[in-house]
Amino acid sequence: MTDPDNIVVQLCVQGMQAETEGRDTRARDLFRQAWDAAQDDYDACIAAHYLARHQATPQETLRWNQECLNRADKVGDGRVRGFYASLHGNMARAHRDLGQIDQAREHFESAAEHIDDVPAGPHQQWLRYRIAAGLRATARSAPQHDDPVGELLTGLCARTDLEALSLLLPPYMGSLGTSEDEERITTALRMLHSERRLPDEQQTVLSRAITVRSAGYGRQDRSRPTTRSR
Image 1: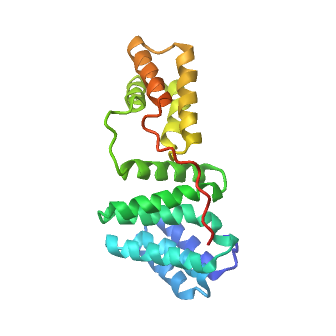
Image 2 (image 1 turned 90 degrees about the horizontal axis):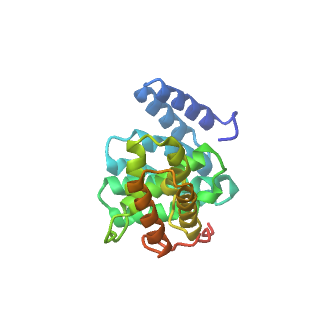
Image 3 (image 1 turned 120 degrees about the vertical axis):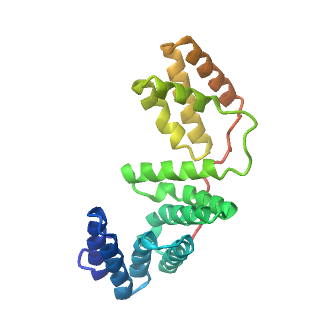
């Protein structure tokens, strides 16, 4: 939202302020006013995004998220390019809340395709984590064995090993399954292994994690897809 003089933007900013103050009814009213004030598809896309957050049922949440995505498609220019990762992520979570796992998975995958269109920063990183969590939760086939990286992270959390966690947790939690993402995890594991600073039991798990990753287990082998034209 880059035009502070736009009435839709003004109403949505007021709605977000009401949200932070716990006045959800007021926030919903302001977002509805923004929807009613929309002059074009871009305005409607913004208003629908916020309205979707204040619906009473999963079905209505999905409906407004779909409206938001449809309006973004109608805009079809650079103003909405950075929206798609979030919009597809919202669609995915709405489908998942309705038990529609296949549809949710498709939208999480679409969200992953668009993550590089989001400006770098905390918002992009948090969005990446949310998408990665969604991809893990909606995986079409469960692994035959537990991923030892998860076991290792559990142990590091139990020992409050913040130094090791700061190295390994970001690439693991943010992996969208591309070869580049998986290589970041393997690199972090090898760096941690080379220091040989973990207790023997965890060092053994760390060695197993490297072996499993190097063998290709658990990888989705998804190269970064080319963003579909809109």
